[in-house]
Length: 345
Ligand code: SF4
Image 1 (cartoon, rainbow, N blue to C red):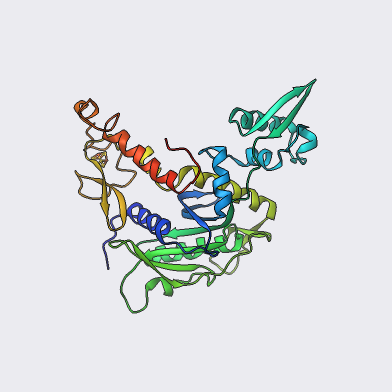
Image 2: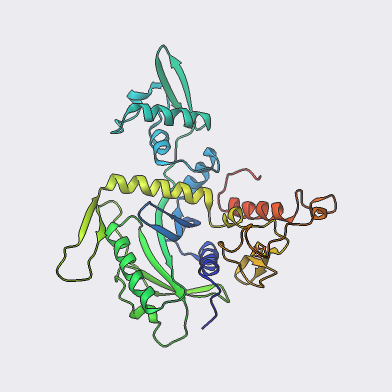
């Protein structure tokens, strides 16, 4: 079995593979990959968006930053002609003052136009917000499948399938080379797909196909599932509108963050930080530890942290601001490549 350095390294490997090799349901879909996104109830390790290519390009008109669900509500209903906002937007089900806040924020970001007519705020869209996401795919990464990890995983995946927020749910685990992959013996719901990944080559293989979940139907949030037979499980209903709003907000955050945002929490300004190119793609690496550092160890509190020598940031260095800044710019450029229509930084 190939050695798995850490969950973080494995997660990056899955993201690289998905960006390179993911086969969308509709062949003409564009693919956007992100990591560590979800709702307050559940965070997915890897998120793959299968996008309408024209819609994805039109989404770029709104800039690289995400819109939350309050702003999306305004953008999705903003009219083509000047209209009093209460006539243009459907009743939000919460006080209109929050809508006014969202309108001002959207206008500050040049996403819509506003004007005052007497006491009334009128709104007009600058661009139609496109329907750019066709499918949302969630992947849970479990490189090392111990018996207790398998038990926890089965419960999590069961919850994901019952809620049906993603169109597909997958588990990715490290390939073991055994005749029957241990993941197939874990008690996972049959609706979840299974990928085995070879982290040394950055390749993956589907060993179990998932079933598409009905994201337009009401979902079930499993709050508590007791292990004894005496107590009752607790469920909560998730209505389709809640699901649609969450999917929209997750897609927006995926658009903004992608999966290379690790550079903003790690220390690329440390003299030991490198981006190493291998067959799996570009991976962060620590020269002092001779491996991919985890996000929790690659911080200012790392005992081996050493700032870039000032000379690296001076004239002799070809990238303005030193290697640390250069690494962030490089990762940002890679992210923008999968978001056509965004200007180069
Ligand atoms: S020495 Fe510490 S801070 Fe520097 S790159 Fe390695 S893990 Fe990160």
